[in-house]
Image (cartoon, rainbow, N blue to C red; front, side, top):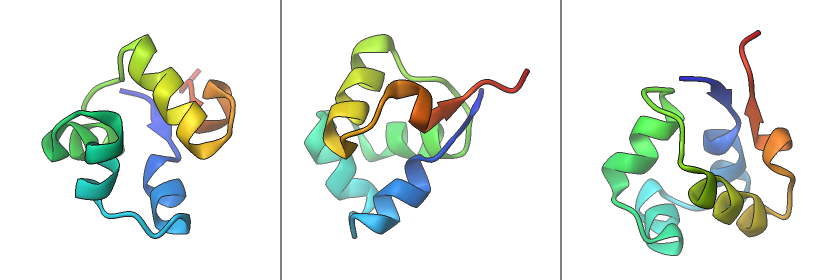
Amino acid sequence: GSKNRIKVLRAEHNLTQADLADKLDVSRQTINALETGKYDPSLPLAFKLARLFGLRIEDIFQDEG
């Protein structure tokens, strides 16, 4: 998995994991797995996240070089 800012962004928008899951049409378990770096999102999901937070994908996900 890669490091990402999902948890921070979610907190800034006052969203729970369930709220975010609902907006992205995924399960809360998926959000938890993304936040803890257990797995990386599909490209469509990454784009959805970027649109939701008004950021570029690379602003949310950082490759661990």
